Length: 190
Image (cartoon, rainbow, N blue to C red; front, side, top):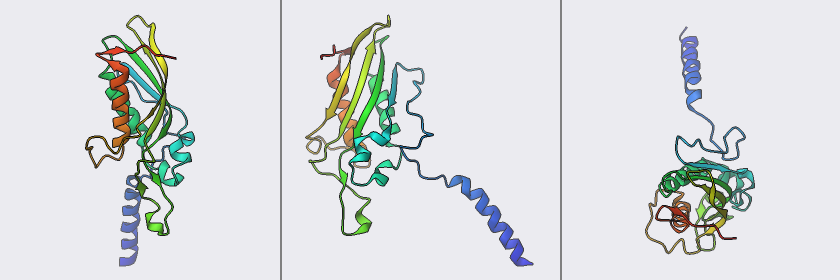
């Protein structure tokens, strides 16, 4: 009589635990949106198919590169930081077209090390994007495409070592600082 009761308890426990054990998110999942809500702000950020990003194509471990929510995390960071740079009434539309995070997954004789990202100066962070800044009247005041890269990313100031996107976030900060000065968008050059 005790065995069926224990079996029933185990089934109920498993049934309640399964929804909490959501499967690992991948940036290439088709169900994940490819844009962020503006949340009432002036900045919209969207991105092209992450499966075509250099990070996934050339990282050395496609499976490891697909894991997580790093595309959405970088887009949120970009949206929040860019919103602080705009002058009153301006809006900014950004489309991320490529991301190549700092580091690579190098082949190793020990399979336990195949999921470790090796960060060296020969693997700098890169982000390609296009943007359009509009004034309060809706007229485009600046637009362009940028290919961001930081070859000296290991020589910069100490960063939060717990943030796996620290190099990419600094790349975004540097671009925003250069592109937008004193709350005014720099006129795009061809």
